[in-house]
Image (cartoon, rainbow, N blue to C red; front, side):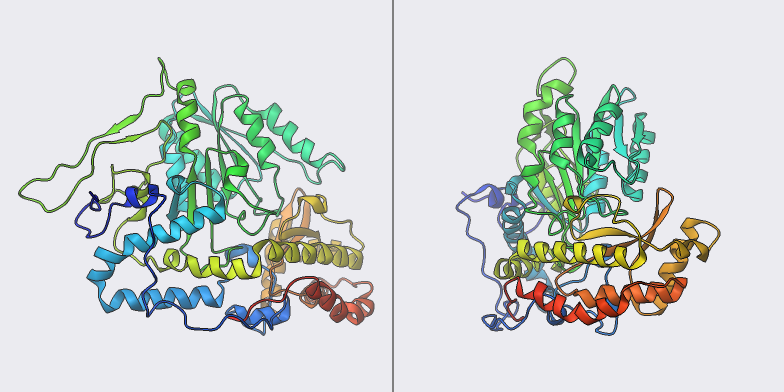
Length: 501
């Protein structure tokens, strides 16, 4: 017998749909499914691919790493979902929403390489991270470890969690540039030496936001697990930014990320993955007076005075993550708590299958390979132009972002490096060039991004704009300009053309 959904919703039980390996997802409604023919293949990576996005053609946009840019196919799919929902709101919310959300969740679990029962779709990584910090059982005897490269808002979450629980937070600094030839080993050693006694949770970026540095996450997780320390990976830049991204490959108990960056979904789609099996296996190591005791949640009881339905007793393993927003699914299981947080626009999650279908046709790894090659090209060309050394870490630790040292003239834009970075970024913006400038360990850098719509000419125009702003004299401008179109063709021809959308 099928169980009904929680609350007053008229669909099947969310937990049952997710756990049932034979469950068949519903077909997309007729007014949502795209009727376009995607068989044509006349786009290539680079300038031609810009038409797959909504970007203004008049801008040099080399800052995809900030907030991404949605694929046109994803944007249009989300719009069709919005229209479909409003044609009959009760039918959509009461009867259609949950099965289609589960469809998106199961497809994303394959993409992320995690169990469907361990995955929650959330609006963004920020909510996912907050949920973890509010759920990990901390006491005044515990501590949270993190590096100085941790994203600033995550540092605030860590401090807030410690203030709330009495735990302490311990930060260790990475010095840039990293020791040549020992970059990865240096990071691992810094963590090994810096982990404090009583550490309950360690937090690592998969890719650092400020620097664009791909961290040796798997090795860092192994170091922590040897000391029975839980690990949270902030993978806001993971999916699409690093080679063969895999949640299970990190080995971490908690992984939080976004889909709107390098997966190019519309904003409002993120993920939280919790390895419940691992948590259950290690619970006895963390719980006093033994045992992997599960947290019992009292069921909601139906009565003659209410039409709301409650599920059976649900056991939550030690260390499970709870949805910080309490609504009808509260107490009914991990998926039920996160799948509904009130009446809002769920179209970003519902449009994820359109993104998945696009990347399956194109090859997400091919896109990442192209972007990685383009980033390396840009770092080499701009470093040579300005006579600066390459970035503060090797090419092997670059993903789809990287730091490029700026000419020394950039430091004269303001009295300190932080203000100089802001002044340069503002001046570039006025020239319709979007790229962040960063002050890192006493030096000024550009943090460049590359995605499938970028091409070598973007970085030549960026370099010229910097020279105009700071008064530097870029070397080899004519040579670069003479080869830039040839370089673009060579890069684009190395990868399979894109299907038209």
